[in-house]
Length: 235
Ligand SMILES: *Cc1c(COP(=O)(O)O)cnc(C)c1O
Image 1: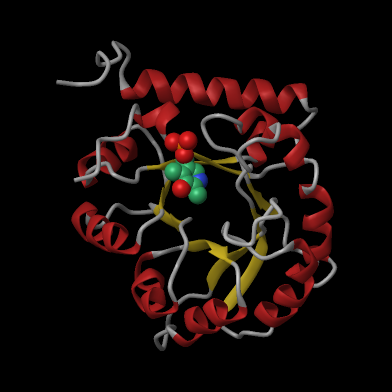
Image 2: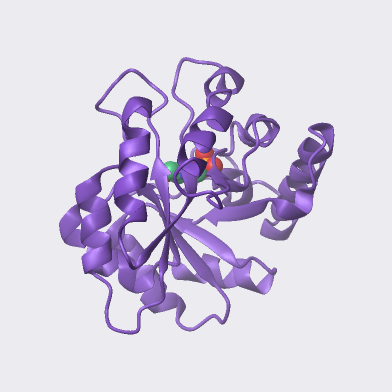
């Protein structure tokens, strides 16, 4: 028995409602909604949901676990123009599998992972877009590079021939108002742009905080449950 009743609205309704709220938040911040990429996070949902989203015009989807990602990308087959964003923590020994299916990896948080993704390029692989994930908390156990180590990671990653540093990624920490945490983003983005001048992506904002992320300058939103509905329980 479901823990709560199925919402009456459809996937298309939820997608449209989120897109409307994105446009409102962008206008409220004096920003052009057209420069914001809405990534639909499809983790725990089947490939059929990705296909349904594709049918509604979605071209950017996000996954956070390598095995699930690899299987789903294979199941969803050849959806022309669909971009898979890998947004989860990654082990270096999974770099090859991630690179094989991802258009962009948002979660590069250490030099060894950048090296592994670079080494995973096959001859003829397109350059891989990567974002440097920054830890906005004081807890080193959370994912992301410490802000003080961001510049060094940017220099290292920018030197790898098959990766293109596009910007930063962050997750709002628990227990702090998202707007307060996201206020660090513009300065962190500047740090990376000091190394790679055109690295202008800021990946931030989830279901609970995407309006705050837009106000802080986010260019890539990673929105799951507000669009997909509640995630199925993991088996
Ligand atoms: C699951 C996930 C999201 C989306 O979460 P929602 O709250 O469902 O929008 C965004 N970013 C990351 C890194 C995630 O793991």
